[in-house]
Image (cartoon, rainbow, N blue to C red; front, top):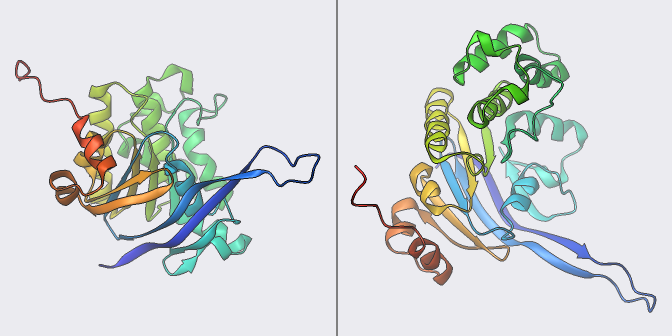
Length: 264
């Protein structure tokens, strides 16, 4: 496998509370606990787990947002956790994030075109207007949408803008943090189909984070299961789905509702 990303014993702790008057140190919570895995080019790794299991913290470690995290996050061979500011800027152009709530992650004072142009302006790219418009079209938005503001769009359309914003800088890896959980089921399917089409066209690698194992099963080549900060199981989608080893994985799979025989 041609690796684009490799994590080695990544650990992130947070302090909880304050130092006491008696000098006792505040307690620490280990949000990510010695997580190791690799990701191949053009591969989708689904990370599933309940709220508070460490999924989003892990994504932020990969982005280099927690330089005090321990272990190694090797993106194209470079350790993100020890990179300097210039190196981090280069990494963040190649690793982009799609967020759970498309409304709160979009600037309400910017039009769709301006939102997608913004990261190009920061990068000093040429012909940014054309590039932003082409990316919006690629993500399923037409010219009539370009001058509209976030409040004028549906949830699915706002998520398409968020995807376009991530895609416009031509990343190699996209971290999708619960990108469909705020959407209706029918719109979820549209967004997942769009992500799959973009992966095929742009040769993207994905880390797709969700609490919904059914969504993870649909989109992933491999599945990793997080529980209380640990990656308790990882394997091919079929392997994890059909022969789970960890009790928590079995619990997640057992919670999937059976198909309705009356729905066709």
